[in-house]
Length: 69
Image 1: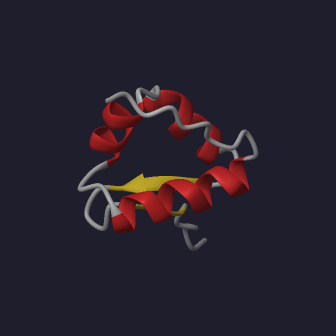
Image 2: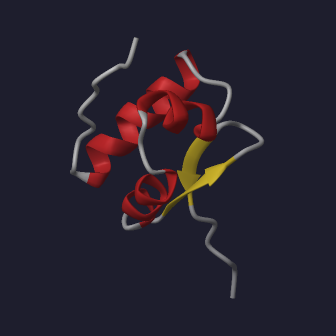
């Protein structure tokens, strides 16, 4: 059965949906994208617009680290 899921276009809303799905349903971003037939690079690019990056160690998008001067 193919799932038809429409993901939000707004990066903040997308972040919330993706992190929730990663926490509750998927072992990795790759598995989520495969299951939803979604382009992983498009998701990463959209969420990076709000300064978040995917952290495989915790299977979540997290804020980009700010380097100390």
